[in-house]
Image 1 (cartoon, rainbow, N blue to C red):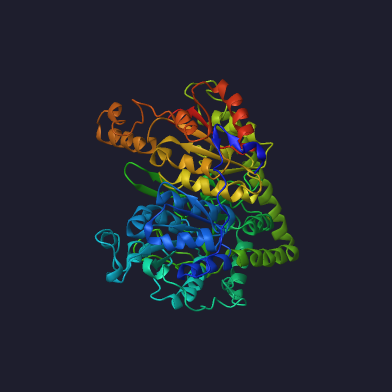
Image 2: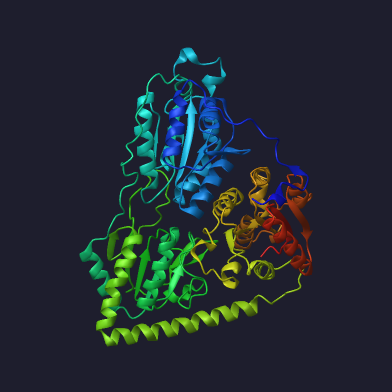
Length: 600
């Protein structure tokens, strides 16, 4: 961090604290810190709690403030920061939650991390389980039998070691389970009294040569060869991708596969799987499925939404695919399927199913296809013809969107295409990252997502976007990238206190409010109900609007150490405000621009 952010907006760094001094005696919680160091976990987001006061002291003094502790106002925020960090970096970080109550606070964030396959090492505490060591009342009401049961249905594993000897093995297993694909959160619960015991003898850590995570799942060679044959025979194949881009090599591998096959790619955007301006990208055109004769799903669960037409009010689904279209599924299948959450979605009756990590399967499949193309002139000609036709459709769509973006250019409230265009002009010369919020896909239509780290993946449910964006910005902080969050107003209202976290921990990011003063996604549903039932559309906003009074996000952000401007209602004022905000972010200060947008 540069010196010029030492004292911005009247927010000075805290006075220097005494250097950590390792105590002469060792404590059981020191062993947990040894493990956090051994496994290289850099940050721990937390809301304080007495149940892990032993661990807290060990991190600060025995561990020399490593992992770096990040104070949050709510446990959901702590878990969301770890979620965003994992999405953006591919590496896990720690979230620490206090006892039963902190765990329950974190519940929704844990669930979203699970369905988004984010590896988070969640540390909790409980008890003491020894009744004789419990403080009256508080230690009783904050403890539970089998505390991990509260989130067991949507974590990959949870465990509570019963002795200090069990801590290293449980930690090693938890890390391995968390990082084995498909990844996800784990929960390790440490008894409060266990943490606070003196460590009277050395406890062995996992051996240095221990392989922390097993190798990837490789595809069956015979099945992969059959897939190559099916793709080579197909006239109009389409590639559907959801989590292929979870690592940079997946993004690059999918480009090579698509180019080898000459097939259009539909990116579901749970991660950035494919370059937005690549001529084979047809992610915004569901029409490509109407004449497809084969669909290749790569690490996909959500196969149904892009391939069907939905009448939302009546919940009627109509398939866009021809009846004889064939399906191939390569991914993790039913691994990690939950017996509780229905995130597995509707079953895909694929003709060929391969259980494999796409990081291995996609390059291997590309090599098989490349060999067939080299040895078959007819296939090579078909690939080129298909590539050219797809490129024409791609360029026509981009030109159409550019033209549509100019409609109502000077309207107030501001249109989403105008806002997307203004932000793009402000950041296109920077090394930028979009953390979340695609402005109803207008950023994907108008921006150039040319590198795998440009976007961590689409937004999840309300009350998740800002916390996850903080984690994305943290992951890119050392690289000096300009992280942009297109932030809905309703989402930020859930945890406005998290603005303080960015200022406190020097996480520079640009937040551009997509502020329509409403929970409009739900408002739309009420409009549909009104039209279906013949009730007044004019009453659909009741219980949905965020007005009277309208939150003043700029004033709120400034009160927590941010540079902030707004509300901005006239589009001509956006460019200047963005220029000033970008300059502040590059100097190390988070900045927020509150823009008032149309409902849609």
